[in-house]
Amino acid sequence: MLAYLLMSGIATGALYAMMAIGLVLVYRSTGHINFSHGELFMFGGFIAYTFFVILGVPYFLSLILAVIGGFVLGILSDRAVYRPLIKAPPLTMVLATVGFSFFLKGIARYFWGSMEGGDYVAFPAAMDPSPIPIGSIMVFPQQLLILAGAIVFVVGFTIFFRMTRAGKMMQATSENPTAAYLSGIRVERVYTLTWGAGSAIAAAAAVLMAPMTLLSPDVGFQLLLKAFAATVLGGLGSMPGAIVGGLLVGILESLGGGYVHSGVQDVSAFIVIIIVLILRPAGIFGVRNIRDT
Image (cartoon, rainbow, N blue to C red):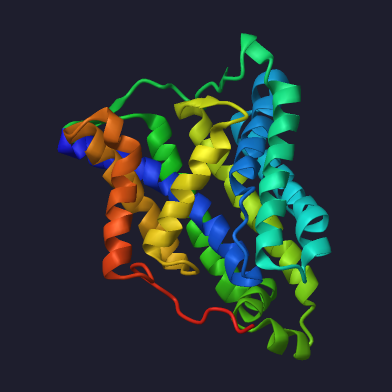
């Protein structure tokens, strides 16, 4: 039972890690938490649902189209929410992103909420859903696909940050926007690229997760809470912390639900987070003075 719970927790945690990476990207570049990130996740899932289920596009092509759609939606959110309020107080930005999340939720409920007789819609599996044995445990193929997809995206973004000019500009902007601007970097474009990249990651996570659960206009809020918990646990602003925090949150949830009670599954990770923050307020990989304001 332990091996199965660990495998299930790692697969779920990989999704949380992808969501947390999107949050960290925006936070490190702009200094703000995007509280509409969960709805960007949800919207990406419904974009894939439209292509895969309604239009009959193959799953992996639907994944690519959903990532592109998520990237475009992230750019639009930057233009509509962040850019007009770039000099506004932090609380204003929080309220703006929360309001934008409700706006996206309303759009999703209007277009997809009435399908199949309710707000919840089923997303078919990309492959045979029958579990396959790996050693002494049974694993669902979609769980392996989630792990593979998470690894591809993490490795891809690592290469992007280290090897590409755009990635290096994003890192420079996150360290010191003023210095980046004075060195010739167009900081506003970097912000736009960051919001788009964060939204694209959320869309990819949604497409990977959708066959394991049901899609609904309200699914984003729960995922945002888990991603935010992973970010805080790993260390706000730390990319390795987002990955480790996401995996830990997934494993803790799985173990809590399996060994204690299913009712504590959603709160077990937060209990541990409270303990961690009491002992180490910066998180496991806490980054201090990320942004020079």
